Image 1 (cartoon, rainbow, N blue to C red):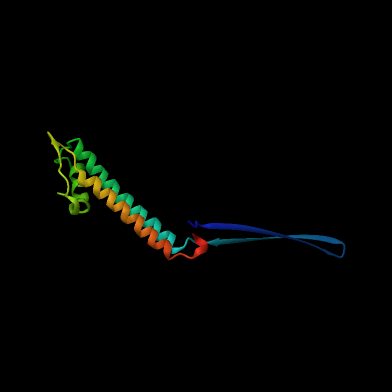
Image 2: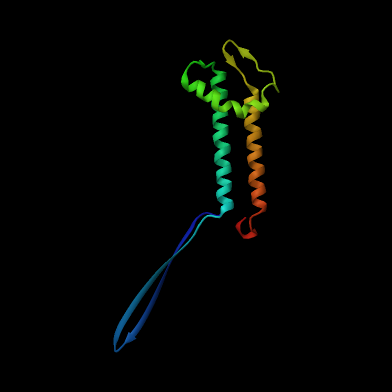
Length: 132
């Protein structure tokens, strides 16, 4: 990926006027900003990572049988619910007391990662050849 590039160029010139040597240094800085495609790719990976983190927390909390009355647990369940909902019921969810092995959460994480890869690869097709 093309990162932010910063280049500093120093030019030295020496001139002689009436027996006096004059030395000049010119410093010029060149910066190029990150391309919009690279920025979009980073945003996509951030969102995929955020969604997978929430689903992963949900999976671990369900696996350990976390109490749903605790505000943090309830927050994680409620915020991750829309992301896991399309996959609920695809697999059996074995329960051991209060612990639940929610395989649909793991499948959702896999699907969101694959979607992220697809989006990033599609953005790569639009990049100029010299940036790849």
